[in-house]
Amino acid sequence: MRAALYYRVSTKMQEHKYSLKAQKEELRKYAKSQEWTIAREYTDVDSGGKLDKTGLNALLDFVEEGGCDVVLCIDQDRLSRLDTVSWEFLKSSLRENHVMIAEPGSITDLDNEDDEFISDIKNLIARREKRSIVRRMMRGKRQRTREGKGWGKPPIEYNYDKNTGTYSINEKWSWVIPFIDDLYINKGYSFKKIAQELNKITTTPRGKKWSDTVVAAKLKNKAYHGVMKKTFANGETIEVENTYPKLRTEEMYEQIQEIREMKYQQKTRENEVPQLLRRTHMTCGLCGRKLTIHMSGTKEYGIHFYITHGRPERQRDDFKCDLSINMIRVEKNIVSAIKNIIKSEELARDHIKMDFDESDAARLKDELKAAKKALSEAHEKVDRLLPLYLDGKFPKEQLDKQHSFLMNEINTHEKRVKKLKAQLTIVESQQFNYDLILEYFKVAERFDTWLTQHEQMDMIGKLFPQATVYEDHISMAGELPNGAPLEINVKVDPNPYEGRYVNKKENRDPWGKYQKIQQMIKDNPGMPQSKIAEELNIAPSTIVRLKNKYGEFEDQVKAIEHDPEGKKKIIEEYVKNNPEASLRQTARDTGISTTTITRIMEKYGIK
Figure 1 (cartoon, rainbow, N blue to C red):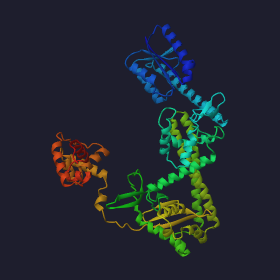
Figure 2 (cartoon, rainbow, N blue to C red):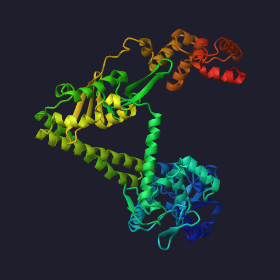
Figure 3 (cartoon, rainbow, N blue to C red):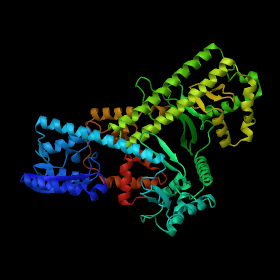
Figure 4 (cartoon, rainbow, N blue to C red):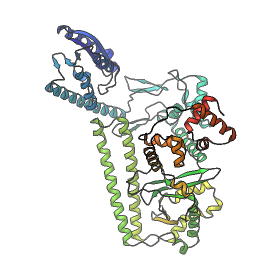
């Protein structure tokens, strides 16, 4: 038989030290004893849990070319420690080409059910062994980290001694950190500008250019003030001080983080238009989804800001929530409510509930019970993550992402439980009065005259971090200094644009348009796209856009003769008479799609 020999080890150390050489000697000797012809040899230095490996891919290509009758490996786990899907793919590739798997002393014929069953058992055992190895390695790494012994590749500013597990300063590159810190702290340079200054001096140790990403990573790395920080797959993060020789002080590190945060906030402010509720977390009172503030309109026709859902509707078909409130309908009422609360207790009662009874306490108890249950369930999900990863259900990247998400969820539930406990205590003891409210709002005196728009936005966010939005009012929630719940209701004024732009709203139904176009095509076979657009009073580009969004139209006959010269003349004439017309306007008036117009203008140089 023709044999393809496959050798695999997991690490470079095994490649050079003993394993590959031992495998080659034994397999060549065995093939010779069986009087097999060695057709080809393949080698991988990689994990057995990966299907996509250079040597294995080449081997499978050779198998599909009919180059061998048997694949010989020292043990089946050298060929595979794959998950079920990948293992089935590998088996099918061998089975379809009538290629067997051989180990010294045994042959597995995948066309034989009993042989295949035994092969599957071997793969399962190999996968279990791999998981055990991973567990042992992770335990060893965690313990090594706790003991302050290093592992893995160190930053370029340090040398690592494998014998002692300790780090020392790399004098060749140790100047980089003080250089970056000086430019960032004292001269106020950006990440990008610091990278440019470094590139004037030298490249990185790998001969590449410095980038703003590398500079940012060095500015937030705790290693440079001595801390070794490692995060493991089970979610545990271990920090050990005094592991690395210090290249910056801890105080300097804290100063750098403060500057980073300040610059981030400043950049965020520069890019956003202030709106009173932008710092408040808003929830829809109709469907429970998150609401955000979105800008709509143009400078020509006016720009407006709306409280609306940020993502397309994903709920059931029988309930479509399209809540959208123009900010001009609530801004004045928010300012008025704050002024009224400060003026008198009587006016404050129009917006705030001050008297609590047993029903309020019962409601808080129910909410507290639900919050505790949610917290317990989140902890249980975290506990189940590691077994899922070890069983191969999660890749590590997905595990890290899911763990981060769950830890945020736990943090949120813990805060809510703490808050509800404090509120329940206050409600039961009746520690709620107007004096406390007045003290809370005294910072908002002359709110609309003394503060800038950004300051007003920040203050509303601190006073009312949560809000529930309904069609006719907004319930804004905060918390008094003693932990008592504070909730004010702000009226939403009627829509000043009610009845205007009705036709536009009716036309905001892309799926309805798509169905109308589809019906027009069925009723009028062979009708040109421009004619369909004319009949339905829409732009030809809209037909193209809807087709790209929802798929090809049934029974649509595409024009064979596109007549680019004729369209060229139409576009030239139109552009000459309407030099200021937009691309969309040109498409609507000429009946030619925006895509075609762009292509023809580029082809013939029309401007």
